[in-house]
Image (cartoon, rainbow, N blue to C red):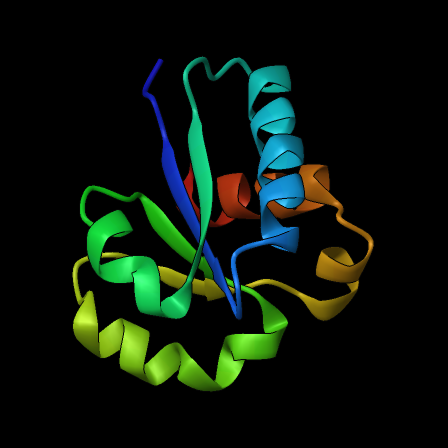
Length: 103
């Protein structure tokens, strides 16, 4: 099964690292092994984004979506739902991505 690289971007990259662990756990439930999910600040995307299957933006940086899309035109960019982000609902976030992208 394909390995996934999911890159999360938020204001500082701190709280999102906890969400990454939950997204990885959800991907493993779906049979994906070796999913990579790391959190960065939006400014740190230049090193992290290449090779990503998707860039997730925290709701607090959703206003930067157009810039991120422009900078990484070959990578889908998705803003995480505020409720899912606040509840750290990694399973719903992953399931939504899997449905959207056919994973």
